[in-house]
Image (cartoon, rainbow, N blue to C red):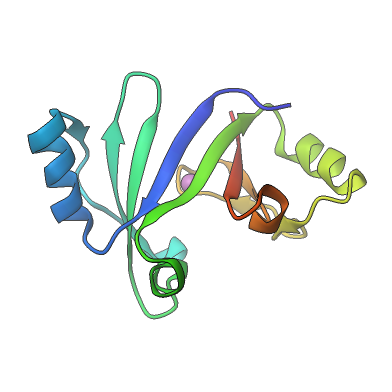
Length: 133
Ligand code: CO
């Protein structure tokens, strides 16, 4: 069902400071900061040849990243894997009893494409995002 690794998202306290370390220490290409209020994040993308690392910092009061940082500290927030069709993936996963987050209302993710999140308990604590490729 799954294809390429689309991105790894990392929750941090300050995207600008962390991105600077990736750039200065590792020579990484980094994007400008992007504010995505509808997702409650400010993001900087670390551009790799085959995938991206997304640094996420809380934006606004109800940011899911604030809760994550409080509960679990900074670190990997989710892994995003590509699928050909979100609708097909949702149907197959539901048939197998997989717990989906927000499956009733198809969501548009931070890249403007349909996404689906799978409950972290299914993967022993890792939040998985599926994105339509
Ligand atoms: Co993501």
